[in-house]
Length: 69
Image 1 (cartoon, helix red, strand yellow):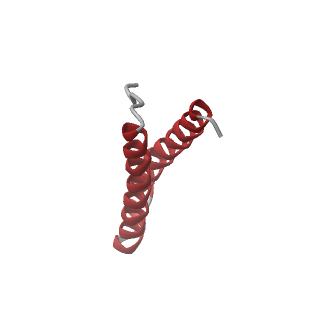
Image 2 (cartoon, one colour):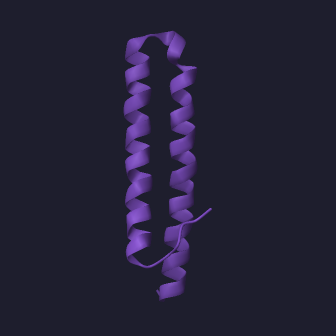
């Protein structure tokens, strides 16, 4: 796989992870009425999604890809 294709695929994966993290963050508000256990599960899930997003961002930064939106 050549470099531009690898960058493009990694960037697409990052963008999907970014959208997923935003969605998971929004779910916290949705489950707020369901109680503390549901809220904690949503917070944990959102944290994992944000961690994935940040990991992809770090990989792209190492490759010199600018992530300004």
